[in-house]
Image 1 (cartoon, rainbow, N blue to C red):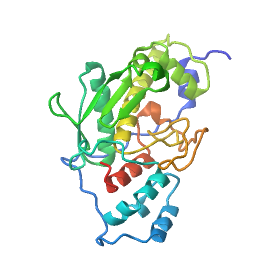
Image 2 (image 1 turned 45 degrees about the vertical axis):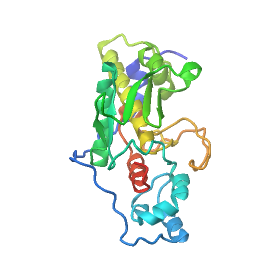
Image 3 (image 1 turned 90 degrees about the vertical axis):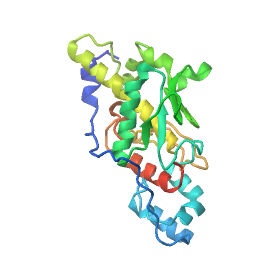
Image 4 (image 1 turned 60 degrees about the vertical axis):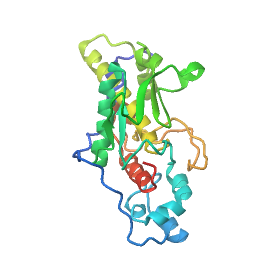
Amino acid sequence: MTKKSLIAAVLASLTFATALPATFLSSPAQPTYASSAKAAAGSTVARAVKKTGDLNPSSSVQHFSKATYTKYSAYFDKQYNVDRMSKSSVFTKHRATVYTPSSQLRGYLAASMKTWNKSLGATVFATGTKAHHTITVNFGTGGKDASEWDGLYKTNKLYVNKRHFYSPSYMLTVLQAISGHKVSAPKTAADKAAYEKYYMGFWEATITHELGHSLGLDHTPYQDDIMYAQSGDSSSSIKYSWTTSKAGNGTVAALTNVLSTRDVNRAKLTKLLGYW
């Protein structure tokens, strides 16, 4: 296959969503539950779930009592690919404090935290210090499985793949996989600017994706979701298996660091479920 320039092969193949407008709040809003403490019947919950789009817990499932979310947590997990993924001490009053000792990652982390905070309308992720934080972000090597991940979240630690981050060729591999074309290293000023934009967007999106795991969001097959993954296996918290991606609205969140409505609604649900 003939190599194409970064601009021709990638820019032409992607659609970019505009950033989600939102306002920072001084403190996270408390989840709002229905006034009745009694759990809704299973049939009522099932009907509400049926009204929602695939893996998208919209308003029809965001109004139940706390008792309902507790009683049917496993059902909600399965229907929307969510589960508790953080230690109970990570979030206090729906807020986590995040710290990185890496000066290289600091800017990317700030952008990722801002993405979630703006979209959720609250300071869910606040900047912590070396002495006071609940999530640590740093580089990791990943050992023998390093080639299989770009970011990794484990209970309260977030790792960015150091080999991929510093590799001069890895981003070209990513762009080739997304565009379906071979791409060469940027040479013109325009191509270099495009490459830099994609590089920054990709690593911001990678950290945003991992912070999504801290909120309890597992993967989806939709490319416009920040929580997109190329494949997934059905489990107690995964609705169905997939090996083929779904386009969604046509954007590629892995390069734009923009959350989809599905990402935001799932985060709202995991808050109601008490996962953060």
